[in-house]
Every structure is written in C-alpha cells, then in structure tokens.
Amino acid sequence: MLSAPTQNPHHPAGAAPLGLDWLDRSVCLYLIAPLFLFCAWFITPVTLALLALALCGTFFALRGPAPKLRLAWYWLLGVAALALLETTLSGIGHFFYTNFFDWVIRDAVLRDLSVAPWPPTYFDHSVHTEELIFILRAAVSYYLPAALVGNWFGNNAANYALFVWTVLGMTLTLLSACRIFPTRTQKVLCLLVFSFFGGLDWVGFSWRYGIPPLGQVLGWWSSYVQYSPNSTLLCWVPHHALPGWLATIFVLRHWRQPTLARTLPLLAAAVPLWSPLVAIGILPFFLLGVNWPRDYKITFDKKSGLVFIPVGLIVLGYLGLDAGAVYHRWEWNDPFFTSTGMFIRWHLRFCLMEFGLLALALSQLRRLDTPFYLSLLLLFLLPLFYYGPMCNDLALRGSIPSLTVLALACVAPLSKPRKSAAYGALLILLLLGAIGAVQEPIRSLIQPRWIPLNLSYPQAAFVQIPGIENPYHPSYFARKNTHGIQPLLRQHPPFNQ
Image 1 (cartoon, rainbow, N blue to C red):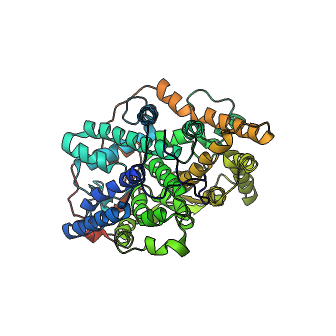
Image 2 (cartoon, helix red, strand yellow):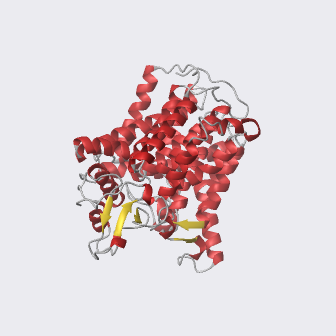
Image 3 (cartoon, rainbow, N blue to C red):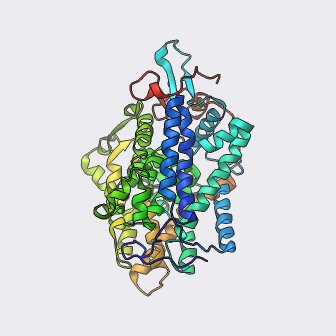
C-alpha cells in the first residue's frame, strides 16, 4: 500500500521519512491555509505584509526534493470512504443528528463569518455605549474556508463546504496515522484503534449511574473533567480535534528529524488559530521533538523560520484580546470537592480510568519513549488548572495531542498477539473504550436530524441558554477599544444580525 519508509531509531514507531512528500505537504497546507484568509482581517498594509510573510515562509518551509510516495488507489479510496462515513455520522453537515448544545453555536459562528465583514463586529442593544461593541475573537481557522464559500454562495453552501473541509481533514489524519506503521496489518489496526479509541467512560458511568442507554453522553462520569474519545471529539469539537491529530501525527513521524525543525515555525503559527488550547497541549512535543543542538539553525532560518515570528505574534495578539476575562482557577477549588484530599482521590481515579491502566499494560508490551512519557505527564497535569467558560476546556482540548500519542502507541503491541496478561488487558481496555466511543455515532443514528437555524451568534446564545444575561462571552468576544492589536484590525460598523 505504501513504500517502505526509511528507518530511524529515534522515531517513536521506528520509521520516518527523509523529506516531506506530498502527503506531508498536504497536511501542512491544510493547517496553514486558513491563516492566509485570516490575513484579510487586518488593515490593508498589515494584510499585505502578513500574507507576504506567510506565503514566503510556507514556500521555503515546504520546498525541496520530495521522496516518492506510492499510495495504492484502493487504499486511498478506502481511507477516504472511512473518513466520509465518520464525518457523516458525526453530524457535521447536518445529514444526521448533530449535538444541539454545541452546534447551534458552531453554526452561528459559520453563519456570521459568511455574512458579515471580517472581523464580525456586534453591538449590545441593551445599552447604547461604545464600550458595548464586541469583536468576534475566536479560533476561526476551521470555519474560514467554508465561510469564504458561504460569502459567495450563501449559508447552505457554507454548511456543505464545512462538511467537505472536515472530510478532507479526516482523510489526511487517517492516512498520516497509518503511515507511521510499516505493515498492512498494523495500518488496518491503526484505523480501527484511532476511530474507536477512548478511556473507560462506559465503566465510569456504569459505576456511578448504572448501565447507560444507547447514545448516552458518557464523558462526564467524573463530574469535573473528561478526556474525550476520538469519536466524541469529531462530533463535538472538530475545530480542536483536526489540528490536534494532524500536528501530533506529523511531529511523531518527523521526531528529531530536520524536517520537523524546518516546518516547526509554520506549525507553531498555524495551530493556535485553529485551537490555542491544542497549541498549549502540543507545545512540549514541539520543543522536545526538535534536535536543537543539531537543527536550531534550520528552525531559525531567515526564509522559512524567522518570517513566521511576526505572523505568530499577530495571531497570538488577536487570540489574547480580552482572554484574561475567561474564567480560570485551580481545579481543587471547585465547589464539587469538599477538601483537597477529595480532589486527590478523584483525580487519581480519573487518571487511572482514562489512561493509567492502559499505560500500565503498554509498559509491559513495548519500549516506552519520550513522547509516551511526555503524554502521560501532560495527561496527569492538565486537569489541575481550570480554564474555560462552563468546563475545563484546557484539559478537554489540551489533552488531544497526548491522547493521540497514547492511541497510536497501542497499535504495534496489538498487532503481535501473545499469551500474556498485559496483552489481554490491552485488548480488554481497548474494547471497553470502544464501547464508550460508539455511543456518539449511535446517538447520531437514533436522534432526529435538525437543520441549521440560520441564527447570529447572540441569537444562538439565547437559544442555547434561555435567559442568558450576556451572550457576548469572553471565550468568543473581545470588547472593542481594548489594548493590543485592535488598531490593526479592519474597522466595521456592527452588522445587521
């Protein structure tokens, strides 16, 4: 199905290419392309400068000889068909049931980006003062290509374009993940494990509440945090999942190779505009994945590296507008916990159920490497600090890179059956995780389909939470005239919602 990759003893799975082939470059272009559109959010001189820098940096980061990649047509079609099936059942595109609570807001963001001048500006009609004008400040990369289509052809076209954009991202994700492994058996297992990977949510829910009905949301069995199965991520938060999966797989494939050093500035500039929380979770893998003593000059090359610094600073400046207003605290201060001791017990139980038991089984079946140890450390630490409007989004989304490492670490041991307690435990844990993961597509099949409501974001917020006092939550909005890069943004009057 694929040509044999070059062996690399430092690679987590034992193989990595010498250069960037067309699939590697497709992944990088998929991640960076929305940033080119984002440049249009700024006044003309800034737009031209940012676009020139981003295009120049991308060209030099991805240029050079490409190793041949022989990809069988039937394998490509098979993976694309699986990506199409998973995306359709996720509810994206509204061909099946879509999780209403989150997607009424997702649809509104896409609609506003499709009909309003960039960046969309809103006016709070409750009080007529300049201070109550808001600018959409959110991780918008997932929506921008579809919004451009919507700007040309209408909101329905934007909905279909978002579906196609997601299918493309899932196809690249599955193809890239399979390439880590050399044998056909391992590639097929990779597709299965990745599609149905999850923690022991079904066990945790059954322990606390009893056997769940089909289609039940299981992730909140621990009450204070969750580590979502991959199917849940695709159904609820593809804008976090796709960059987390693609960037992490890319790092693993090019671990400690010059190719990672050369593309790191591109990825570091692109990923935050998709998901700043995923960017936080993948930052340690970026830092440890590069062989700095040998390759630091490649990363800071003036053509492919340094040009992304002003681009990245502008992106971070935009995402940082009013970001301090988002609720945050240490997790053990949650009123759910009556004492620090109670938090410690719950946290240890959560870690054991979501990744600890799986890590113990894998430790007996494979050689543990730096990405594996790093993923366990991050999965343990992320729930300690709460950041998010209604739940700990830092843990929920920052965990995606580490969970991706853990999922891929299961494939090679699973492909070598043996009579051992560790192998049996691995098989049982993956099957139990899959039972929880299939709840998402089951819910899409048994719940009634609904179509996009064509609401603006403020209208959707009132539908999502009736009686909400302030629909302009700091997770999505920044007050106009706050400090930072706002003078560089295009100025528009609030659009007619």
